[in-house]
Amino acid sequence: MQWLLQDFEDTHKLVAALDRLSLDYSLHKVVPFVGDLIPEPVIADPSRVVLFGSYALWRYAAAHGLRPGVFKLEPFSHQEVWHPYLLNGPEAQILSLRDIPSDLADDGRAWFIRPIQDNKEIAGGIKSTGEILELARKVLALDEDDIPNGALRHDTQLMLTEPVRILTEWRLWVVAGRIVTYSLYKQGARVVYRREIDDDALAFARHMVELHPRYADAYVIDVCRTDQGLFMLETNCLNAAGFYAADMIELARAIADMPA
Image (cartoon, rainbow, N blue to C red; front, side, top):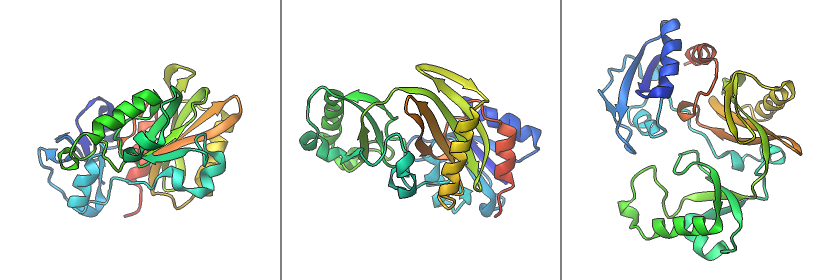
């Protein structure tokens, strides 16, 4: 497997693992939104290339026919098998950005908001209705032809849900239907990276993976504990997700061993 990596701090954690495993990699700058690589890599076998860094790398992988390239995902919120377990479940309000000014009441309410697609137009977070409406107005004031790839667009689908108090959050890495590593990344309001997970949270995440075995060849799944129990938060593109305190050796080995 040939590894093409965006040259920034988080992927350097992966570099150390690839060095340990004697796997072939190269570091590149990524042209924002477009995803072109500098310097241009020399591809030995297009069927054995994986990319890590900006989500925009999927464009490079698609343009050059690289496989597995970037593991693109269908929206987790569209997967009915997971609906009973989602923290932001079927009761979520789904709006296109262009519909927000007419369909979202300016009542001062707080919402957790994130894009439906896993393409990082904005990070998920809590915003007031006023902030969301102002964001929509700014984007809608732009001509769609002037909006760069990877930015919010008039037709971007957004999920809005009621904020919930989360006690603990974990990220788990799934490769070929198996959880290969995990990391704690938040306790209450504190960001905490440790390679640990509660036994019941690990069992819960494994159940989520088993419920949807054909979801994707590789992805990350975030789960959390609230006062009401364990829930699934979301899935994310493995190639563009933060590594936190994951076991990089296990992750790199699992990807390298994936069948062509």
